Image (cartoon, rainbow, N blue to C red; front, side):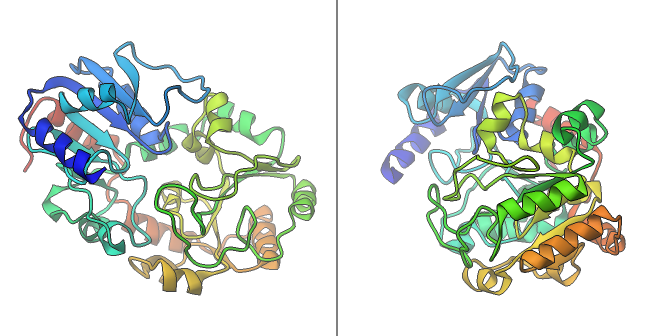
Length: 377
């Protein structure tokens, strides 16, 4: 594949370019890329090529522009469209680890680097024209991870984070996801043993959907019922846990479950009254809402030793309770249910560190300048 990637790179560097945009993400309907599809449809872009992993799209209720076509990524048609496209937006790598100078490429990486990735884990990096960051705090980590110059990093926040802000008070979404319950909790654990993409084992795998020792889903469901809470847990797409069987108040969902209902992860996340996670980069995004976070991180030491963190800032200024076992989980949710919150100051501190700009006009100015071929200083 590296050989074919280099051939694609060389051909792309000499072929003419049309005002087409390539979109590619993992999972298929990533919120960042969906936002770019919507933006591109309202510009002078003449064709939007959405690259997908399979011949057919997952079942979904999304509405796309008439300019948008869906093409299998690993196909001759997909490669040809790519080679003649002026613009490329990605959340992960594409055909090669770098892009030619006659093509404008934007890395909307799927999360700010709390944990080590890319070059830091032995990869070549991902050299694009621009990489989007939520804060200058992450710029050096992004530069190190992708083997790029910091001057190519644009601090304007990720498109999906403005979706969080826009939908945060959407009463219709709240009604749909609450299902008549009092409060909504979203639990987003990262993977320990991946089964696709970068195959690896990080930290300690406890063999259940939330990676917590002694976790009992039936007992936890009864606890949630008493507290009138609905908890959605969405396993990481790369995890080995694929079941979507859940209970009345403890719902296990995946991307396909959301897509089939016309929703994305960030539709759900925007309605969460509290987030539970461990070391997922979604923590960075959720902090923009300054709502409670419970850090359920039972293998923090093992994870740090195997995967490694880019910085200790988050865990030295923890913006929420930290639990490492089932009893700690119950205690944290009881405090949340009883409106006991001792971490608002820490959330504000970390949120300001992780988000320089909360105004979408900066992002749209960057995109407008990009499409209109203006130079960046």
